[in-house]
Amino acid sequence: MYIQWGYNVEAYTKSNIHFIMSNGNDFVLHNAKAKHKPDFEGIYQRPLDISIPQYNYRLGFYLNEKHTTSLELNFDHIKYVVTDGQTVRVTGKINGKQVEGDSVLDPERFLHLEHTDGGNLLHLNYVKQHTVLMNKARTRPLVNTIWKAGAGINIPRTDFTYKGDRLNNKFHIAGYNISAEAGARYYFGKKWFLEGTGKTGFVKYLNALVNTTHEVGNRVRHSFGYIEGILLIGYDISFKQR
Image 1 (tube, one colour):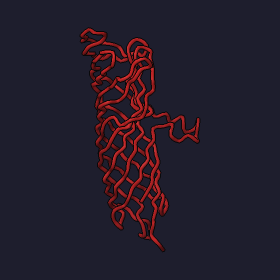
Image 2 (cartoon, one colour; image 1 turned 135 degrees about the horizontal axis):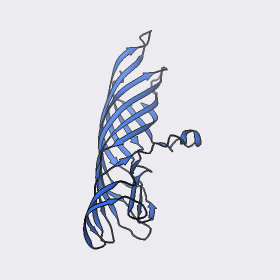
Image 3 (cartoon, one colour; image 1 turned 60 degrees about the horizontal axis):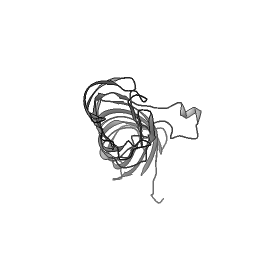
């Protein structure tokens, strides 16, 4: 088997975000833009808290002796932040009235939404590797190409502000995701390796919680595509008896 830890960066497509609120408000933000929040400064500001930046971990199980095929439990701690100050088209019902027009996203006057604790994509990958370069003694791989495909669930903790009223919610299963990934591994030791990959996928949130302090039962639904760059360090674990 193998274990990995690393960090990531993302870019997201625009999203139609549907809010269903307990006060009767039911509206959609159309083509809302969002960005990531890498927080890499946390690596040197609080080096013992390695989970501040957008991080990844992997737990893989090889399915053959040559280690060319594996199944991998894959967790991506992504951060998705709807951009404040943008103007979006809003349709639906707010305060008992039908609305259709443009509005500026502002946390105090309207709303702010982010999955920053985080978007949290948990999925199972099927992984294939191909050795393109051996070490000088030709006893082990030096460079492998790698590709992955997988699907799984989203476990977000959503931070929502509505007209200045903010609450960071609880973790829960809120949807699903699918993805494909490709890149390379470089073995700088017999067991240790670096892995760099590019990833793309689709994320669907069906019931992300957006409770405010005074109102419960609110939900948000939306979906988006993404591209992700990932860099990890890994270690191969062998259970062979010598």
